[in-house]
Length: 231
Image 1 (spheres, rainbow, N blue to C red):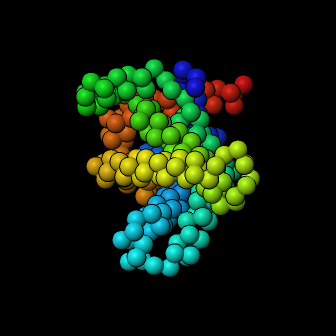
Image 2: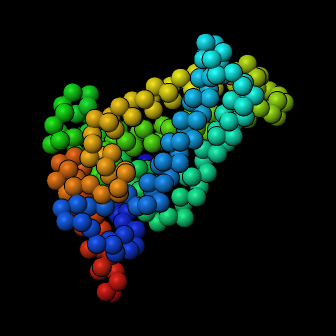
């Protein structure tokens, strides 16, 4: 990852007027991508639990249906991401997530030292924890799809045993479950962040406090874009 935050404001992002005292955080497309991905992930985890945990499997029954839902929801997980690439706002946020700035390293040092004040944890539109979470989930989904396909279509790669694929798939499933639960817990602890994902807007005071580098970077990017249009 590059060490600078860079400019990531999509053209025309500020065209829609913002409510007084609020700033647009997510576009409609981004919110639907998040919701659809979350629903597919939830179906994957719930059906996996119905297949893996004996008491739950007996309670739910209909194993063939659970297997079908699990397989197809897993295969469909990358679809919202791929469709989202048509959105300029989504592509801009992907560039933000893929860039680690100096203040992101400061954020991680503050976490290690258990410093919780917003001043000790500067962040752009996404903090370092959110960037690591997004990257980790993306990599885990790819591995889960790969091992799942090996289990579904046997004999594709004969040098990888089905037992090995099952072991990696199950182990990673537990890890994803814990990480996703942690993500949901953190989200519930911040009502303004939840409001931003639900409506697309957050208060400017929250943005300045929790993501102090975000708005200055937005203004700088808009200034650069205006200068380029004038030349």
